Length: 108
Image 1 (cartoon, rainbow, N blue to C red):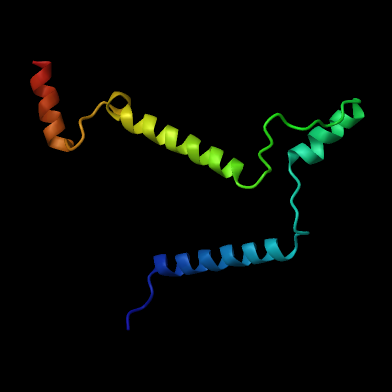
Image 2 (cartoon, rainbow, N blue to C red):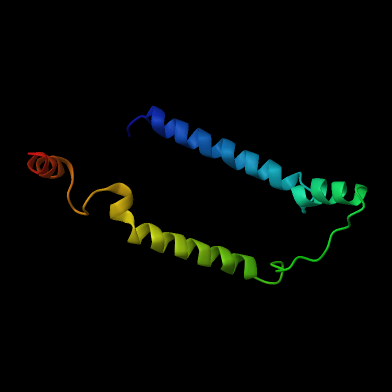
C-alpha cells in the first residue's frame, strides 16, 4: 500500500472541515433566515411611514421564481451560444498551431 500524497491529505482535511462547518451551521440556526428585505428595508420603510405593499408579480407562489430563473438561464445560454464566434473570435474546432497558421496566412 502506498503512502497518501499531500494532495489526498489536503482534500480529505478540507472535506472534513467543510462538513463540520455545514453541520454546525445547520445545527445552530433557528431555521428561518431573514433577508435584507425583512431586516433592513421593511424596518426603514415602517419608520418612514411607508408600510410594505403587495408586489406586482408575486413570486412566492409555488415554483414561479424557479421557473423565471430557468427561463432567464435558458435565454442567456442561447444568446451566448448563438454569439459565441463574435464574442470569442475563434472558429470552433481550430486550436493552437492550426489557428496560428491561419492568422499568419491572413495577415500576409
